[in-house]
Length: 278
Image: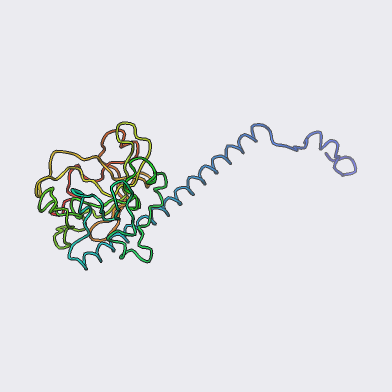
């Protein structure tokens, strides 16, 4: 207010315009809600960015496996065998070897080790942190890094000879794969354990199982194996194909609930067309 002398009457001003020294309860709740929303958005963005980085690292690991297998094929005339003695002593895999059937596979002794750089180790997928090591029951597939090989269509000659020891002795020759851009070589894999309807943990698993078993040369049977492809990158699985490109594929074909709960199933059509070399 202005008095007769023209100056502002401070007492009257404070009476008409009381000071505000604090937020009201409603204002405080609004501010807290806004902060909560911003924090949630920031956390979600950071989480997505971290997973994008892990997925990119995983894709690079798969490219290294592809290149190692290509170099192996240049030296041997065919891709590495997935499990050459699986019908016998069962001590050799594409990712390692072991001295007996009750110990884990040693990656340093694997057939691709010399092509994988100084350490010879398969780099582990950074998004596959929650799994049991070889110390757990049935954790028999150590050293594959969480990656599985197309053992039916690339890591054996099952499509040529049928399910037999002869077929397991060697992988396919690169020139025998009709459509490399649409034939799986390696991808994200895992397997739930204990085996049954109520698994409680995941283990590494070194085979990317197709949608159907192949028992006779070139014939897709009506029998379905248990799935092993793991969609751990926010519902997608990284795949490296036989031409070297990497893609992130969504889960499209589901198996029983105890596999789906662990994000394990198949991508692509419900047949072997993406695993079949012909």
